Length: 467
Image (cartoon, rainbow, N blue to C red; front, top):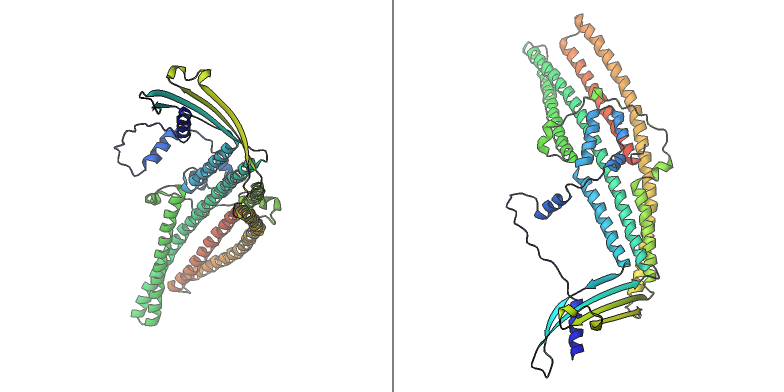
């Protein structure tokens, strides 16, 4: 009976988990942040981690090619403060801890316990005080390297998360650059549109005066008024687009949209992107894209998972050790006469599992084939995106050159008509119409100049900042 009591205590200690209790003072501060989040921030606020690799991800030297310190500062600010990037970095930490969790399965598991017990044996009237302290060790002998392969599989996910982080930094940097350049374009476009509206207002006023004197028809006056209203509507639309982009830009920088009015930017005329469009892109750059590298890692992981599924058919071998101390008084509990030691080993091989292991193996093989096809597709997609970005950059540059020629001719034409106006051979109304044409072509030049810069950002993103 005494042995039965001891075994009962041993079973209860084996299933028992000890958890220390600590008192936590209630925080009376009114804040919108969860308490758990605040405690984590407080714990890690003095932890210093180098962010140099993040700046290497975005290739800050490439952004310096725009000769705009303001843009470079915004890129650096996004690297530090963008919340999507912070989540990407934390995602890497999560996968790293998953690797450590899986690696723990390769190591022995040990536990100790302690329990005082008050027992009363059958046939006796008195009770006895007993103290029990078991120590258990268990280790799955990984002779087939199944657990090691599982760790390797989880490591592939961790390495893939680092590639996702790199892709996120490149994508956010490209978004910051694109939105910034579009803001610069809108500033210039709005400036020119205001001049167009001003010119149309003068045209309309002249039309009204001429109509009163019977020199122009009412229909022409109505058309001038329609053009004026259309220009004013377009101006409102452009300003709306700018405000929307400013709000979006603040979020990319990790700032509140309430600070949209404080966003600084350079003028379009001061931007001079001096990098030439390459004739071709080396395949070595394409295979360094994060999505390509991750697809390759996922193929390797799927292969490991197939290997693990095959090893599930092999027996698992466990070694267990027990050190059991039992005494009537606590002072003699750890003496040799009150100690029981045991060491055991065993193998377990499932005979019938309802076909689950066979199904699991076939599932992993099918998953491997699917991931392999995704790898092939990723390869083709990477080539397509690089080629598309390269062709777009070349074609838009050619279009820009043609537009600049057209702008040069339009300026010459306006200058010629300005001379004619000064000589009195054409009216001011005619000169204003020529001026409106010049302003319209200037808007087109501004639009296409920014398009060429945005194309370069697209090529930067397609080549994973390695251009």
